[in-house]
Length: 458
Image 1 (cartoon, one colour):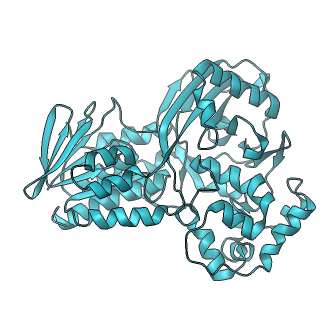
Image 2 (cartoon, rainbow, N blue to C red):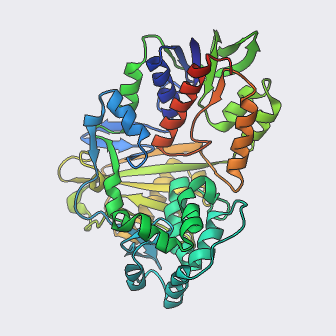
Image 3 (cartoon, helix red, strand yellow):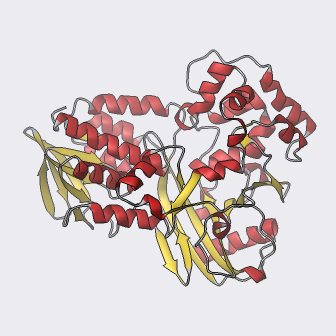
């Protein structure tokens, strides 16, 4: 079976590798001059600088299972021991996230009651979750609506929005709960109280600091995983600088134009951002293309700053998040060299600031120099980091983060229903059922398995 994979991000690479495992003849085409998509790692002067994702969540098994199969798992490292706290900006100051606060809700009510993040009225409102009835409606709900309804406005604005908004670079008012945090939806259905449900199913293992034990990363950076996957593909299987421009049925097969080459294959996996997939499918199925084009995207950027450790104030925890109600340009900051070993040489620290997203697209209008100065000003105000950095890197990701807005899963179900009528065609990537590395790996492998199982015949 001959299959073309369109897109060389982690989903496309996982799909291509899985096809090779299943005995297919694979050609992977990528528009850019490198593989990896948003994953980009620079190693310079002893620093390992991530321009995009920096970690893999082991709670979802698919990425680590792939690493095991390619003999890469032993090159993974966990987060550093010690102070694994996350901090939250509150009234312009860094305040520790209460122990046991799991993204949207507390598992330790006493820790939440003792936290200066919330007013007493906010704490009492949070505790009401213990007695409130469960929601009866089945229609999709925004994440913001869910948190306000169960735990109150302060829980949303001061913790849930910055934590989840940082993951999805999204507006919590429009973010689908079912598509992004289905676990909390299920907790309400089964346990009525989200807090009680978390305590019953997660307990102390999901405390804010302890969850960092669930994250790993390649010792040499995320780019090393991309390189390892690429090496596992057959020689000449990858075509760089080969944008896919036309896709059509050719009898019982598919004809794909990529760069200056035309491929005739039994199956195609499109592992690109949704707008690119929409353009490619426009002549194949107009309705699928319309639905794909309706998936919104947000842009973001990271600013990495390297310092001498002696020039910095003490850095507590792994970093901090910034609620939208603080009206700051910065979304979050990670102390990268505190989070994973090997990110900075001895006597140095590496810090990463995150900007943009659905709520602050205006910040990305700044040029690189102004963006760096903006982030440095925020770090000075919030973390007391006023030193001149020894090294600076800016990585921009325009229209790179799919927005799982309310109704997202219905849209994806409609797309999948239509694609089921197109034998030998599958989609994969962060636009559909998960934005993390494990989700993208899972989606790519599932698409590959489906094509091989049917031989491209549907």
